[in-house]
Image 1 (tube, helix red, strand yellow):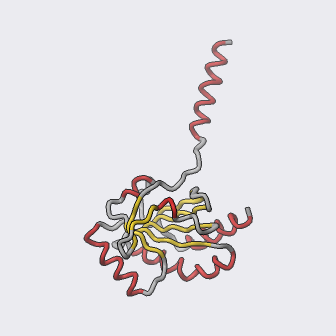
Image 2 (cartoon, helix red, strand yellow):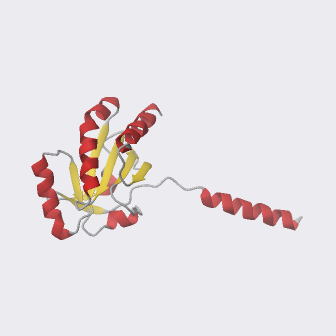
Image 3 (cartoon, helix red, strand yellow):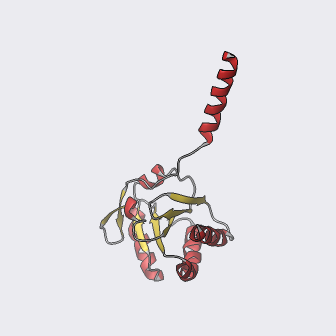
Length: 165
């Protein structure tokens, strides 16, 4: 009888280890393009959904993803109230170049600079670019690392799915 209890306890521990609480945004203070400090935990408060792209300027896929997202943003905003934010994990030497490139390209979105890669570490992001879809409470609904040509379609599917919930 005791043997059965131990087996049951082991099984519960094994299955409970696979259950993961929904990840939330960490409370990390980053700087925007003008140098103002912004707590990342406040990004989600204005909208139903928030799309965050974490990227590095040396990665061409990051630029491609940002361009793809900006081309689709109007369609997504028609479906749901969506905010878009990009977080650059470039070091302090490259961050001024990143700000100037974004302005030169005429991209109009909130840009945050994670010069010390604190946000990247706390979110356990391993490869660039990384996409995060957040709900209005700051919970990470969906996360995807890396770039593929079908990524924008996957984002559209996730936005539609969350809108329907």
